Image (cartoon, rainbow, N blue to C red; front, side):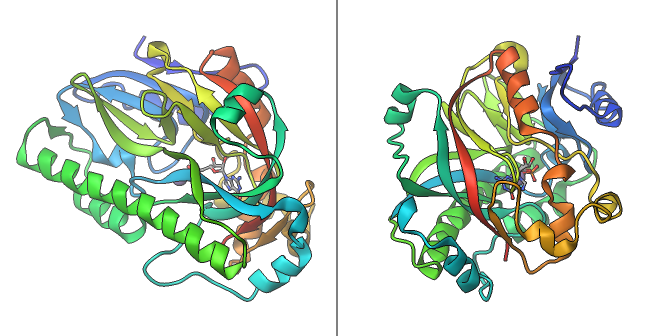
Length: 338
Ligand SMILES: Nc1nc2c(ncn2[C@@H]2O[C@H](COP(=O)(O)O)[C@@H](O)[C@H]2O)c(=O)[nH]1
Ligand SMILES: [Mn+2]
């Protein structure tokens, strides 16, 4: 079967997203497709891997080429951080200019190791439960957007053609820019927050890109490659755990692992569905006690925890398919989106 959907009874999965993925199966060169547990609808399906031969489809990668999540270790002890004072300080700040977080669900999160499940693997990563960590989700910003505009037609690009070669060149630059952007954001944020840190990278994993392996093209949109990433971060939400995992490469799942929990409620519907339950300001604190700092007030509803699938269902599904081993969980302290 060309399209495989990773499912589990408890996991919420949208039929329209499955149909959107199936509609790609007949494109020239498409060999196989995997819908990951965080699959959801977008301009193109998100949470999937599409494997092709001979042709590539830039629009399947989308505009945020190189988007990823990086985990940095700070040198600040959790117990020394006065969270409320820090939040008050950060509320009057913003990151503008050459390096920026980006809108939507991009974020910088000050976070703590909550529970270690595999101490040996945690030691290999040098994880110290006393220290504060930073989780940064950001991408290639305007660079990715301009590449997307140039190549977004539904037409595939044939291997070795001039357009194919120039897309790959631009795509690789966007990945490098996105990585650099995350690293600069880590420096800017720790200085702004006055957090001691040399920002050691613990894990850096990207989820929107084209991976070439053995003459095949793996279009990854919200999909982490277990071939390139031995360790990965599966992002939760501002109000739920994110997971540090070891990936297990599996051909049947196109060597893929989910990048997050995936959207459940469309942005445009969030306010209508959630405002009878929460006043806007109540969404600045989460049920975990963490804080959200966002100048964009609409994002408080659009990015609420309930706008997403349950991370534990996504993780359970990945475990069931033997694609990951859990190392530890992260618990957000402050989610910053300015
Ligand atoms: N730890 C946090 N994770 C979050 C937050 N907002 C969203 N998310 C997760 O990130 C992925 C990334 O989605 P993408 O398709 O835009 O790359 C998403 O699926 C959520 O699981 C947050 O504030 N904190
Ligand atoms: Mn992303």
